[in-house]
Image 1 (cartoon, protein in one colour):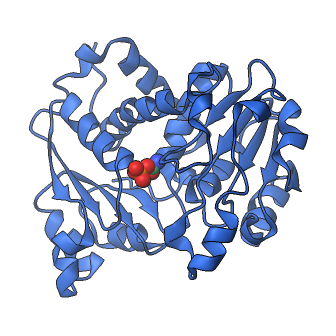
Image 2 (tube, helix red, strand yellow):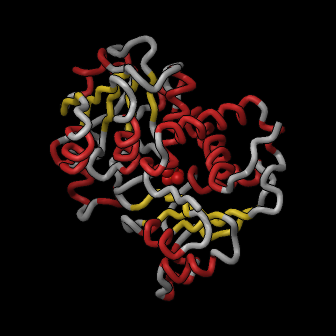
Length: 307
Ligand code: CP
């Protein structure tokens, strides 16, 4: 039985297999309509979500399976003090697979230790978000045509942004990836990512604080939200939240084929005028999230690909 807690739980070959399966699902979704008949997915969300929870649920429904779960800690027995370990022991008898989001880093790993069903980390604190990374990789592969030879700009909250941490972990395994890390001093990438991931893999990167200066060199720009919920004081959040706003004036500096990605939700870090630019692919990216989660559920449940 396999759990997905970090993007590194898949080898590059296994990742490519999931992406290929997702592409086959995109090409012929009807073929997959009943492959999970009789199977149940539990979504255990201790933290708010729109895309991740609903795309997991849509994925299982698209495969012919069923769903159950909770969408906030308050509506579960966590509010009465139940531990993650006890919860997953119980859910293991109710469902065949589960996706868990939790504000505490490492909570899905604890769940995996006590679980009798595959556990998927749907985001743990500021740590990892592996299924967002699968979504991002599928988007890049499909819309850019490759996962290598890319200069990738990551902009915004690089300190707490789990989507950024997971994406860096995944992309360093592909050839000739360069990173441009764009953030204020206070939201720079954590030292452990710099040292244990970027330096350890001899990946080229630079840290800058002005988005316009680096726009011309980027193949991808991955924007992120400054996350109010991760700050200890409101003053710091208010000071930092509007430092990077992508608008059409800044898009003028970008290559004609640069893509703008964002895990969403956005607040105001991408002006809505950018939405109509063909290089803005963040809503398409959210759509890809359903297909890649269908592929992931099938892979973890060891469901045969239909002919
Ligand atoms: N991208 C993402 O994780 O969105 P949600 O918080 O809405 O799930």
